[in-house]
Amino acid sequence: MPNAPSAAPLPPAPIAMAPRAALLMLVALTSGFALSSAFRTVAAIMAAPLQADFGLSPQALGVFAGTFHFAFGAMQLFMGIGIDLYGVRRTILAAFPLCIAGALLSALAPGYGALLLGQALIGVGCAPAFLVCTVFIARHFAPQRFAAMSGMAMALGTLGMLFTGTPLAWLVQQWSWRAGFVVLAALALAAWLWIWRSVHEPVAAPAQQEAPRESVREAVLRFAALFTVPHTWGIVVLGAVTYAALISLRGLWLGPMLIERHGFSLVQSGNVALALSVVALCGPMLFGRIDPGPARRRRWIVACTLAMAVLFAAMVLPHSALLDVACMLAVGLLSGFIVLQYADVRAAYPAALTGRAMAVFTMAMFLGVAAMQWLTGLVASLAKRGGTDPYLAVMASIAVLLALAALAFRLLPHPPPGER
Image (cartoon, rainbow, N blue to C red; front, side, top):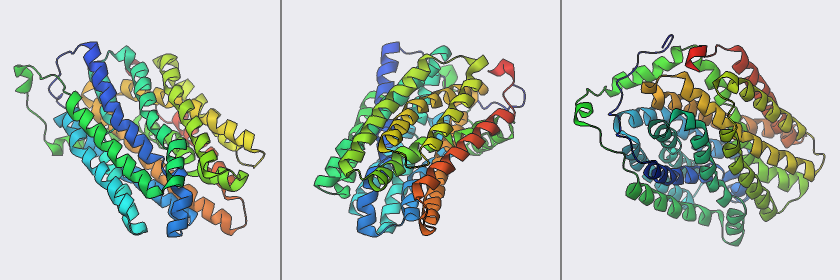
């Protein structure tokens, strides 16, 4: 493959498994991703009670929401290497208990510092949650089904957001935000047990088992070498913004914006979050089904990114609650096009680098979420000090970032046609 790093030795190739068995294992793996989706969106509902308990500023709230994503994104390198060297099962089972520990620490946190540490542990524990799904699909399903199966996995994973809508809002209102973390810890334990019981990749043939395994140092060097491939940069830049825009809205600003701008109650804002999550559940399945194929996929990605920028721009001014809610729901549906970005990454690199290529993309996505939540928290704080509507500043900044990312993706080098 021209312009690509030297291919790493493949991990022991799995024996083909029955489609039904592969599907059941994938569903079990998506339970971990569903919990990851829940943890990354709790701030939208917990923002108000956390501000009341710990006196958090909008900037501190942005740091709280971003800590999960920073830890999640920073660990993608190691999770991608772990998956390539040790497999899907071992990687997720080793990491996920940290998520449970982090949730319990958050529930018991005496102050802001302990709360941030809990979020960091949750981020590390959830780091392989979606990556194991995409690599499992790439290894055990036909290439032409990658977009559709990834869309299904993303949709099932989005079920976790349903809990952080009305159910979490009711739970927090009836008891406290700490009770929310306790319930999430219990659900995470149930997901870990399901994966432990259900996911068993077939054993490779003896000849494949004897193949030399690359060292961790070699794996790190090959991971870093992906950044020398020219088309990696367009993938990384866009990946850092699209999902970040959705999660910054759904996972941080939706609740505060509806409560402060339009006078919604916590449960009413939870209802909107629930509706957005249901719509977002349908988006990946829709775009996975209508994937236009390699020749036109990148044009679709640019067009969808620009359309999302328009929706955020429409929320800049406080016209009406109806318009803001409609734009939020439209963002949720349109965000399904992110599955096309995963299909684009899958097609841009050789099979030996699938785990690491997906890890680079996922790392960009979640470091982007952390950066955007920190940045929008800062923007909101500055706007508030200046007497400006903070949500006007937040939505405008997200719209601009989306437009710039679409432009960069269009202008930066593309994979050679033969590789797409």
